[in-house]
Length: 114
Image 1 (cartoon, rainbow, N blue to C red):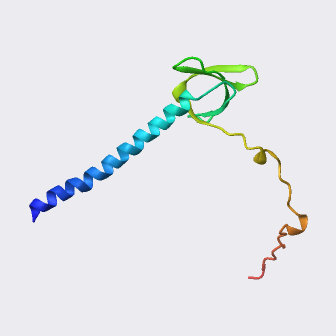
Image 2 (cartoon, helix red, strand yellow):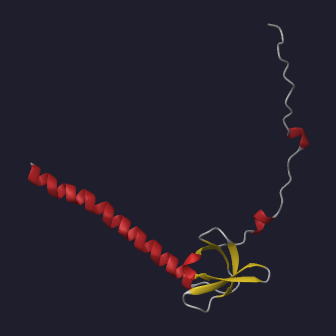
Image 3 (cartoon, helix red, strand yellow):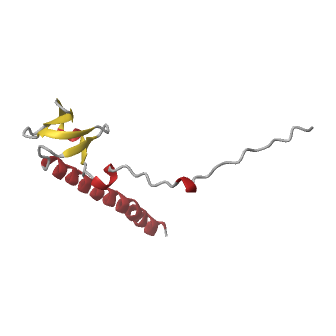
């Protein structure tokens, strides 16, 4: 019976390792595709959470990002986490709260008798 358990145990350990390796390889390929597709004007977010606009993407290892108007800094390409798609719907300020819907708390009277 134990001779049957050993191969089964190996299969149970090998399958998750194989699947996680495939998933990691796919993620690396997608990140490389993103880094190769960057062009000037693209909005990006870095791994540190900084939002910027690509100013120059001609170098293979570095990329120039404009972090504020007229402020261009040089970063490693690997520091870019993702492209940011501008969502024009969320840029608008929504103020649709009706004053009649507001909940008003009534004052609470405390019992001072002991």
